[in-house]
Length: 275
Image (cartoon, rainbow, N blue to C red):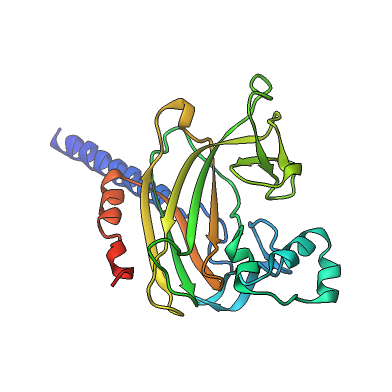
């Protein structure tokens, strides 16, 4: 009888251990595909929105280590318009001459999007992390960012109820709403679009130039249905001062409340860049 009970207890302990291990492995998975930018070919790494090769570049030698995303906000806005309209014409012409206030850094900035991440019903806590480098110092107001944007899918029932700027980041016919855009992007929502309902930002302030630094932020998704995203987009972004900004080792992982609180308690103070 004792041997039988002992066998049952051992089985229960082994099962609990395996379940805990499986849960831990699930939390440790990086949801950002190719977050270290090592895979792909051409001018765009695998699992990322198309890079234009000028404002968003696949830097293959200056990462942390190896490859990374380079956002160049010194590109002039007039050149960016030509790049988007006719890249061959731009490459034939080359860069224009202009001042710092004529750059994309002084206007819309530069960015790239990681592949969409679908949220599971039981997802609550997350930790976003990345390594960031810049040749311009951060300030209280200006720094490289990683934007977290959450969306709900537009169904046939609610199509047309919202008007916004819908961007096709992945050239796949799917529009994602945002708070800015050109006139041709402004329209009513359509079935299959994604409406933005959630925002969070990782502020990557670093007073030291040309040095890699690791940044993390933890966050909790809303439980209210109206604001709870079904899909998340991760957007490295840079604007002012006009310069060169590198991003590497991006990671979004499921976490616990305790892990999120621990990460956020260690976030650097804004006072660091004001000294």
